[in-house]
Image (cartoon, rainbow, N blue to C red; front, top):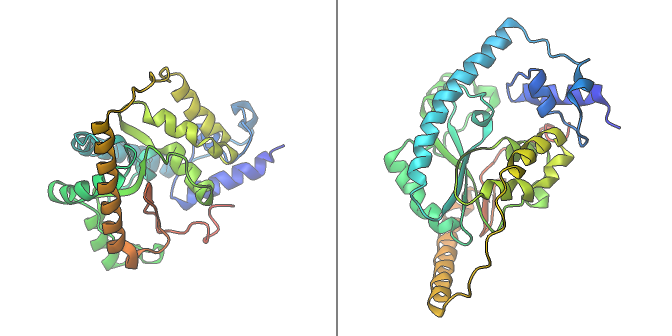
Length: 293
């Protein structure tokens, strides 16, 4: 049986760490619990927000709405790449909690065996046509108010940050990364482009998130299950030419992976990079005591 008082404290503490204020609806959805908790049981834990906090929520929603429109324009550009199956925004933007100086965090899923080939083409083009966030622009929590931080913030604002890549063969988050923070990232991702119902497959492949956020997983899985399409018809046997084309594509993708990995190898800290996935999240929230409160 869940200790509701403790779960509420953990949930509000987690939100506060990421500079977020939860109303009653938000508390219910993001309650840290492995059991589904009805709203009526949380009625004795009303979220008493101050006028300033309510104003912050409204301001962040307005800022997020503007940034979402910019993100949609970028997604339209990326949707022209036939190997890109799915695009979502993540982080504070996905939960309408963005600040003016926040970047635009994107999560991209590609067709199987095309991730690194796609990235090799997409990254330079994003740099040409849009403002791309560069790895050197990092701000520690201790230096947020410094003059240097102010300059970095101007470089980060509305910059495109492609910080999570998966291909369709690796939709399930690996066990080593299954924690509260990643569960949040999975369930709060906001789709803005979906080719072929990939979002449904992604959510169902990550049912482990219910162990941390049962209410949020129920909400996400309910929304996708209502729109689930029937299973696709059995694929016809590939011709020799098609098989050869797929093998050549795999070869190019593998070459692109090794090329990019060699470039990134000396810069990798806590990022997780494989042939089928790239988790560019250098912050170790587990080490800070935030993941498992």
